[in-house]
Every structure is written in C-alpha cells, then in structure tokens.
Length: 91
Image (cartoon, rainbow, N blue to C red):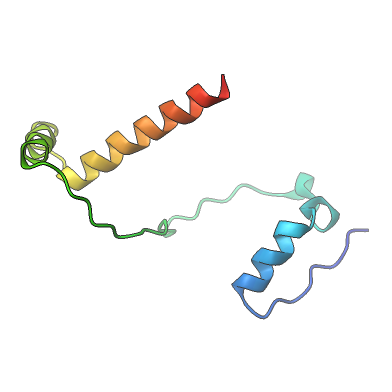
C-alpha cells in the first residue's frame, strides 16, 4: 500500500514536499500512462540582450535564409550549444 499524497496549500508547498520525499513511496509508476499535453506552454523568461549591431544583422540574415524569426533562430542556437556543453561536461 502506497502512502497517501497530502493536500497542499499552494505550488511552493508541493514543490518543497516533492524535493524532500521519494515519489515511489506515493505513486506506483508501473501503473502510469503516457499522456500528451497539447496545450502546455513552457514557462518563459523575458530578457534584455545587448549584441553588437553587426552580429544582430548577421543573425537576422541567417534567420531570413531559414525563413524563421531571428528570436526563434537565436533560441535554436542557444539550445544546441547548451546541449553540446552539457554533453561535453558528462564525458
């Protein structure tokens, strides 16, 4: 018999709980089912970024060649580089 998950007052309380408890004591993951959350949007953080004008113009040129907004291309470049760095640090 698994332990009963307590009721939480807010997300912070729930986050603190799961940070200090093992979910396998509360949930039988073998009974879990895969779901697709179609309308889930990732949390985003707006930042201000200063770039040399020439770099910004080159970024817009590359984005135009790929027919994507420059901000989307910048996110792609950052995601690729972050993944490279994380994989390099594992080896």
